[in-house]
Image (cartoon, rainbow, N blue to C red; front, side, top):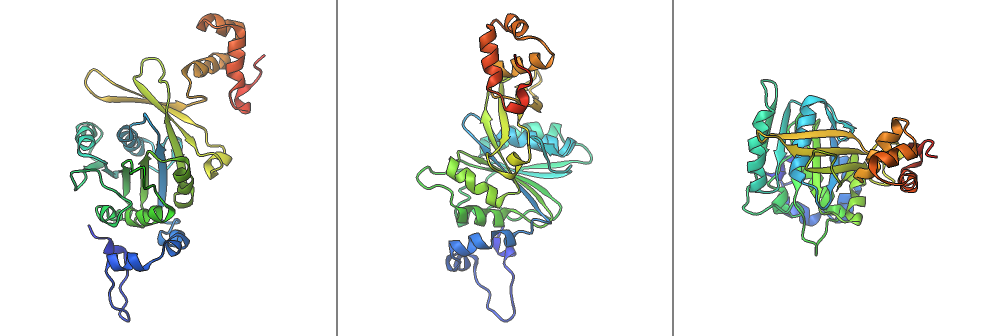
Length: 299
């Protein structure tokens, strides 16, 4: 699809090609007009930064499941959706999702998996890469997985603005899952997305194969308004179906989560230590490492 849809034609001015317009527009002008480019009162755009060990494909799958069922994704209230497009980063992931998605679809739900139009993962920082994704339809919902970029050339604010202009349509919901961002690139996300979550790999709870924790970026709007981290545990059942368990998370460390769970049952430090095989001082140190509002009476 062509990016020229987003460019308005005026009878008093000759039509300018997308390529020429992008060359004429300075990065500073792009950044300054970023919030005008997409009306945030009509559209909502969420950014997820997936760290090492986190499968962006599984994150996208889980988001699609939750959008259809509850409208809440990793603790964010997005709104229940019935039509969802998932733009994957590579053909292997597209094949995996196409096996799982039909199990989610019912008579009222439409979920489509869109594979890259190129043999290699697209580079959405380039004009050619952005041309592969047009703005979503009004009232639609889209999940876009962004491949890991070349480490020698990182995302800039101008790149993010141009990418957002390309994928976000009016009155739409968009979730963008970035992979392999560094801390500086993550800091840019809060200027261009309504809400931003950082996803990091963590120890899964008993009986699960993998897990990731989603938390607000430090200093972001979500963080200062009290968004609570969540953990998503994942495993495959005997029939090859993906099973997920999403719940509030106090720590990426499995032992600390178990200590907290037992403490919430009003067990003493000695009782917890006996049950888990650790001494009282270890239990106390683990509880001390928790955020202040979660510690309670730990002595």
